[in-house]
Length: 133
Image (cartoon, rainbow, N blue to C red; front, side, top):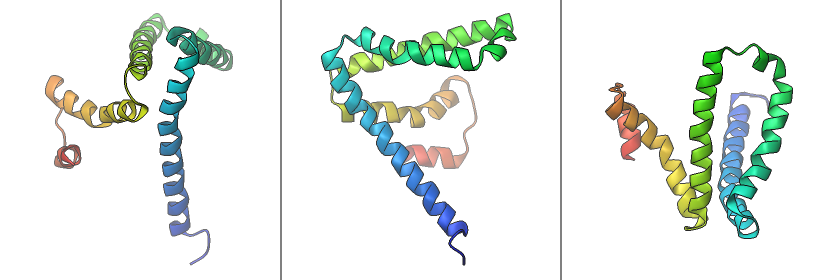
C-alpha cells in the first residue's frame, strides 16, 4: 500500500477532526478570558461586526439577488443565532468553560430528538442508540 492510500487519508481526516474539536473546545476558554476584560456585548460586537462586513463584501453580488423572502428568513435565522451567541457568552460569565462546552455539545444530540418530538420526524434506530450513548 502506498503512503497516499486510503488508510493514510483516513488518518489525516481523523487528525483534522481531533484538531478541530480541540480548537472548538479552546474557544470557550478564550471567550471566557475575553469577557473578563470586555463587556459581553462589546466583545461580541468586536467579534462579529468585522466578520459580517467581510462576508457582505465577499458575497455582495449574491446578496443583491436575494429575494425578499430570502432576506426575511435570513434575518429570522440571524436573530436566533445572535440570541444564542449572547446567551452562551453571558452563560460563560456564570459557569466554567468545560460546562459551557458540554452544554453546547448537547445540541448535537438534542436537535434530532427535539425534531422527533416536536416536528414528528422519524429517527432511525441508530440515531436513538447514539443519543442513548
